[in-house]
Image (cartoon, rainbow, N blue to C red; front, side, top):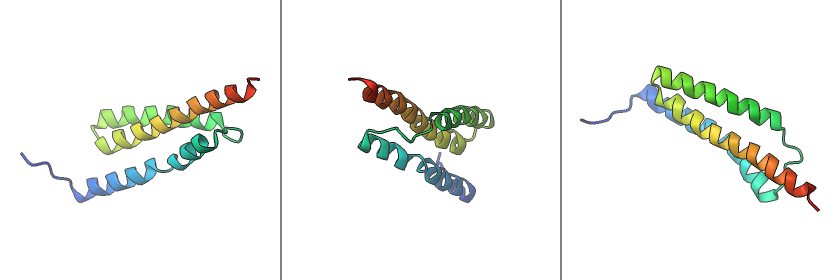
Length: 94
């Protein structure tokens, strides 16, 4: 049984891949500079909650484009939340 991707699905996967790249530059910059001074924690908390809701929606719709895209963005959002706490704590320590 062959697995075929329709043009609409392909468009969704490409759009999803590009969407996942939106947080990647910030994550890489934060790791490189080890600074979270100007990072909004609330923005990433809201994004994480939003991604969980989108994943649930994708599961209910059985839509792998939505599930995969939002799972990657959730990982990036959770990474930023972790970095916010880790680097903020590091800079407060003597």
